[in-house]
Length: 69
Image 1 (cartoon, helix red, strand yellow):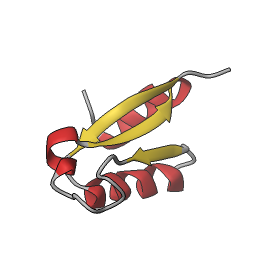
Image 2 (spheres, helix red, strand yellow; image 1 turned 135 degrees about the vertical axis):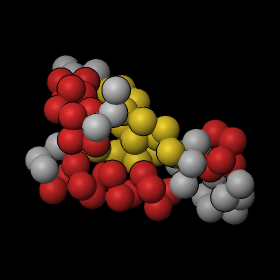
Image 3 (cartoon, one colour; image 1 turned 90 degrees about the vertical axis):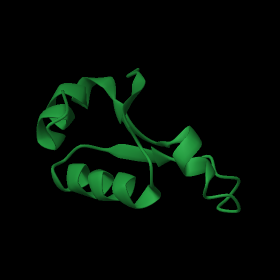
């Protein structure tokens, strides 16, 4: 079974969703994880961040696509 890792932590849901959609269009499955009390406290996005999760087997390819070093 593959291990899920954090690809990147974003400060907004919108930025994480853009990266998510771009990677999905390139054949890489991702998940956006947000802990902002169901949208009731969006300020938590900044302090806790919005995580883009990925299968570690796709990590290198995703980093190349997003130009993350």
